[in-house]
Amino acid sequence: MADIPESAISERFLAGSGPGGQNVNKVATACQLRVDVFALGLPPDAYRRLRTLAGSRLTADGELVILARRFRTQEANRADARERLGELIDAALVRPERRIKTKPSKAARARRVDSKKARSAVKAGRGRVRGTD
Figure 1 (cartoon, one colour):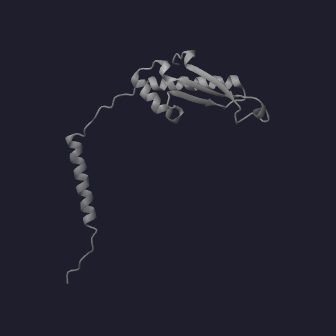
Figure 2: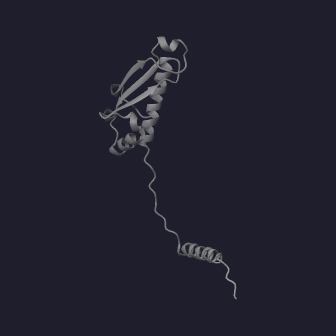
């Protein structure tokens, strides 16, 4: 998991929905994690990938917002939010494999044309049969 400076993170606890019964209405268990992505010191290409991966979770002023409300306790939701943040940053740091362009061989192109010609002949033979009167 990526090393995230504490100064870049701010947390708020909100009244969440989800499991908890009546407790949900009384206790702020949902965790809203806000991270300043510029303070993370990511390389430019990783920042671009993070922006794509985050989608609407990234605000206009460069804050990544993660809302965790899956669990019944603040601690579990806090850990869940930090875990998801780490996974997102790790995914952004992975450089995708470069695609190597390939070209079909001459023989493969010839086979393709031959099969198209054969299919064309089959379809051409389906026309109306004319009687010789």
